[in-house]
Amino acid sequence: MGADTCSAPQGDATELTMGPAVTADASVTLSERAANHIRNFLAKRGSGLGIKLGVRTSGCSGMAYKLEFADSVDPEDIQFESFGVKVFVDPKSLSYLAGTELDFVREGLNEGFKFNNPNVKNACGCGESFNV
Image (cartoon, rainbow, N blue to C red; front, side, top):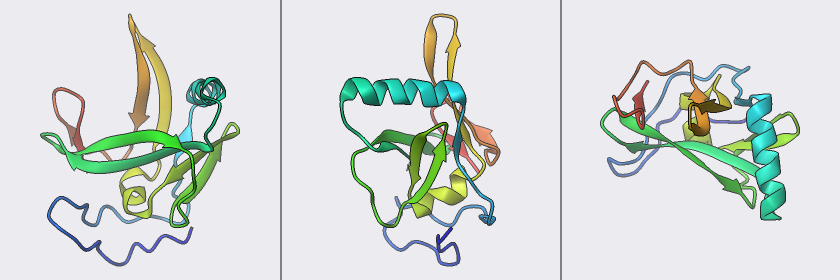
């Protein structure tokens, strides 16, 4: 997919280090519910190319998810599409997100996005951060 997974990123200690190896069929997908929710939100917003997913160092378990609207395309981003919605992932985050499905769930009175990530080894009690 064009991502260079053979070299570790350079920078200060808050930057991501090498994650799990990425296979050629690594992808990030959306459930139909998540795609519908994002599509409706983009329509109400009136702009946006899709969503951008990533990870950042944070929390008690080491990493946290980033989710934001993609208003422009970074040439380095890896692009996927699910149910007509474009998903952009930066190359450094792809090794942590490979195989992830983003779902939109309702649990009782709460609703929101849920990352079904097969790479997660453990998560903190608050559910905001994870480790691979």
